[in-house]
Image: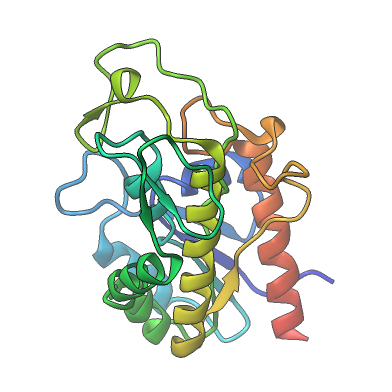
Length: 234
């Protein structure tokens, strides 16, 4: 069943793969929100508010906003290696962090977000949040030796163990799902058919950098949004 209304997708850099997948399809608009200090994005928050105000109860708002914390915390190796106590790969000499401690820290940070709550309150229709894609098991190091991730040199630091990155992503998805439930927003935590048997993002859906997915993944995200919007409208 297809939704009867329009779909508005709003979010961060992960909207780019979704926008590439839309390719002129009617009834879908994708807005990459530009923050006050961001050099990326193309839509200011006032325009987003205007687009949401034009929605009707039969439409659907999908937000791609949360889900970067696992990368900020654990994409790269740390000067002091750490591992979760729940069985993630342990580097020699790693500092062990209890899962509950990491979960509580994530919950505190995520619970303080305001964007999704503001957009959901403005929307006259069903609102969903789409979790960022799972980590890549073996992302390629950038060719540029000066490439930075949140101020850290990627090639010099190297990527953290895959199992640890996956464990952090799974924990963040769990925390986000709990938070969204408290504000009445739907949770798209997983996109069927896009992961390897071990749980990583399948190479067919890799974008060229370490953290993003491609247009093929964006198409699968749209399928999920359509299915949930149709079910909500039924």
